[in-house]
Every structure is written in C-alpha cells, then in structure tokens.
Length: 275
Image (cartoon, rainbow, N blue to C red; front, side, top):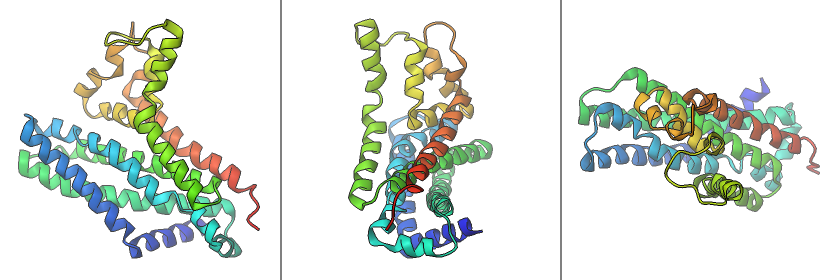
C-alpha cells in the first residue's frame, strides 16, 4: 500500500538522520533518571515508582513528538519535494496517513526503548516489576505519544512553511503544558465570581481539565493504578462523579485527540494549491 511505502520511507529517514536515536536517548534520560532520582528522596515501592513514569512522560513526550513530526509535510512543501512525492502514485490522504504512521513509529520505538531501560532500573531498585502493569502503561504512553504526533502532523498539513509550523507547535506545547489549567479557572471566575479554592468543585471544571491530552493520559493511568484513581479528579467533585471523570474516559479523550487533528489537517491539505 502507498501508505506503508510513505511510512517506511519516513521511518528510515528518521533512522538515517539519527532523529530516532536522539529521541530515544532523551526518553531514557528523563524516565530512568526520574525514577532513580525519586527513589533517592521518596519512599516508593515498585508500583508507585512505575506510576511515577507518567510525570516525565507528560512533559517530554509532547516536546519530542511535536519536534519529530511538525515538519512532516510543511518541510516538504517549503522545499518543494512534496510535488515529487505526490507525483508518485500517492494521494494526499495516503501521504498524510503515511507520515502519521511513520512518525508515530519513530516515537513509539523511542518510548519502547526508554521503557526497556527503565525496566532494568526498576528491577535493580525494587527487585520485581508487574509485567502486566508495565506493558499496559507502555501501551498507554505510546497512545499518548501518537496523539501529539497526530497534532503535529495535522499542523504540518495545514501550514505551508517551516516557520508557521514551528510557531504552531510551540503554541500547542505552551497551551497544553501551561495555559490549559487556567481555562476552567477563568470560566469558574466568570460563573461564580470567585477563584476556585482547594475544596470540591463542579464536575464540569474537571471535564475541561480532562480534555487536555496530558491530563487525559494521567487520568487513564488510573486504570492500572487504582490508588491514583482514588485521588484523581473524581475524588474532588461536588456530589457523585459523572462518567466522564472515570479513568476509562481518558482513553476516549486521547482517541479523539488522535483522530481529530490529523483529520482537520487533511481537510486543509486536500484543498491547498501546491503549485
């Protein structure tokens, strides 16, 4: 299939350019380093240490996935090589899906490599690691990485230059890492006339927070770590928590974030004149 041809070339280009190795090294440094550092300052067991992997992942995966994929299409449009690619028997949809698959493979392999090394660190520190929980968290983290690859590819498909794609990628990172938490706070202030405190809050407040893919990833990890779920958004809501504050809903949010950005990027890409 043309999609697989494009994906394979994209992946091989990443290997040749050493992008894959750089991303893997960064993941290894942050995941293994975080686990080791936390072990020195906190009393953790093997389960809580495994859960802590979501902390570095929530920061480093968005950065690396965006960097790995934001030029997937925009870079080729600016250089003109996109015309050559589309001159082959590839449709624009096949190019976009191939780029999405190829860049997702790069990030997923990097995540897998980091988790393998981190498993050795956990085994050395705690003796045993739950294989089921470990593989489950690995798959969830791979989905989280794929989400930001989709966002980056969607941006790349919708922009014509490297500068615009970079600006949009930086904007996405800042929005999800810094600005998003202020959105429900602002809405709450407009509705209630006060700044939210540390007590129980309306369910909609946490729904807005969960729509951030980083928070959705953390929430979904509660499927594998029940204690984390017990202290999640659902425990801070006024009244009975609705279904969208359950851990499984985080998977729904991640799935939507994987599909929608690439789809919107394609709608723009298929209409643009590449002449």
